Image 1 (cartoon, rainbow, N blue to C red):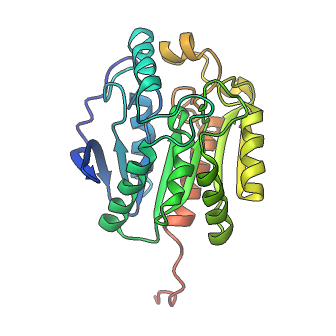
Image 2: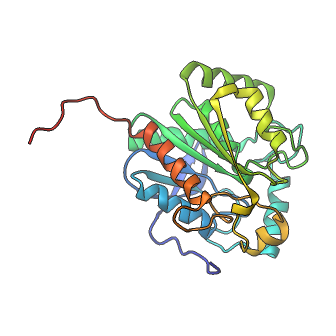
Length: 276
C-alpha cells in the first residue's frame, strides 16, 4: 500500500473533553472501541485495523493525536512527526516522564463513547507510541477491554513503563478489583518493545497481563518506508508488519484481538432459547 487514505467512510467529528477539541473519526455500530494511532499517525494500515474492528460489530473511534490523517508513512514526514511528538507537552516519550497527559483526554473520550454507544463498556487498542495509552485508559471505569500493542514508550528505557507511580498503583488495583485482562503483542526481536518491557508489565499486573510474542519471521518483510528505514525492526504486529494472508500468525493475532473485544463487549445473553 502506497497511497493515502481519504477516510471517506468515517464521520469526521470534533469532540471536546474538558474544553480541548480533537478530530475523531467514527464509524460502525455497536459497543465502542477506541483505536489509537501509531507513529507517525493515522496511516492506511491503522485505518485497515479500524475497519476490521468496525466490521466485527463495533463503533470505532479513531482520535487524531499527531501526524497527517490518512497519510502513507514516509521517512521524511515520519521523522518530523516523531520529533514534534517527543517535545510535545501532551506526551512523555522518555524515561522518568511518567504518564502522558493526553491519556486524560482519551479517558474522557472513552466516557463519551460509552454514553453514545451503550453496552457493558469500551475497548481500547493502543499501537506503538500509544501502545501503553490503552492501559492508562483503564483508569476510566468504562474501559473494560484494553489491548496494548508493541508499546514503545519510554523510548530510552527498554524496561520502563510509561506510567507514574500513582497511576501504576491505580491501574494494578483496578485490574485486580474488576478482573480485567490486558492483552498485548510484540515481535520477539523488537528493539522498541523489548522482552524487558513485557516483563515489567507482568511484574505490575501479574497473571492479568496476557503478553503474546510472535517470531520475527512472521513480520511483513516490506513495510512502508518509515518502518523499514526508521523503525528498522519487526514491530507493528497488526498494522505495518501484518501479512494479510489467511492463517498467517499476524492475522491470527488480529482475530484474537477481535475475539477478545467480542467476548467482553458483546457478552452472551442468558435469556430463553429461541423456539422454532
